Length: 345
Image 1 (spheres, rainbow, N blue to C red):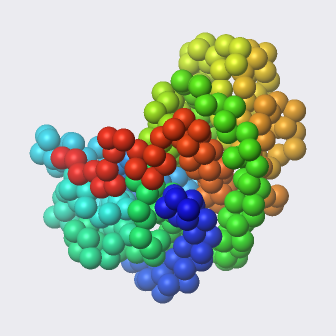
Image 2 (cartoon, rainbow, N blue to C red):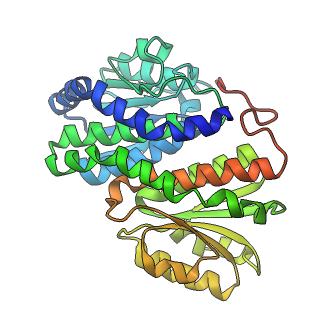
């Protein structure tokens, strides 16, 4: 078995472990946020972790009602600027905790009196040692270069923190069911290896999401780029209509993340436009009305809350990218030219 197969399969248990082991710490961090009462939230991350930050941007803005910005670390490093973070909750997200530029954002926040939080998979990492609070992912070792379980545990950690911060007991109950929904999603994805070879010769793809699943579009596109060496572009459904849809012609592959959600009617309208252009639509959904547009169906469990759907919806994308890479003859654990930890300034 490849490392990536094992790590994809470990995601339900990794998230179950995270929710159990970090419950007290999450409650402590949530209490600190409530006491600090931040004016805004500033999140620094790179790569896959930046896609987790996009999820946090939606979740924290919608559920906690606080404005959230995604930091540009080079402002702090290359340009040495000092944006005013004195009333911010500053969050750094990194699987390894070794991202020097993300750590610099945390340091600048600390100097200005911000409340700081690091979310990493290494309790002894530089970022974990820098921030006032650390949320440990408990994902276990991740050997494959392409992040899978560290991404979904990041999302689950963010979800757990927000539910504790907002004291939302209904959502806390929903979150407790997440490991089972992840297991069900993996079962529903078992057919993907039987048809992934159909796309062996594709050279480009678009991945579309909206709302909470804007982050999912970015992360699936990244997995396909990393593992399959395919030119991929990721878009909000709204942005895709503003010009990029012009590239779609007969046979153009488009992954559309369209679970039961507030954006669903808009996504279905887009699917109609894609059908008129004869696109190949690979649809990640649990909404039956989407299947009439699907060249390939990538099902999600019924009853999945929209705010948690990105944690499940990325799984079919991971499985697709992994099997497509193998059909293209690439190393699925160690894509050429990539390393597990990338340090940028």
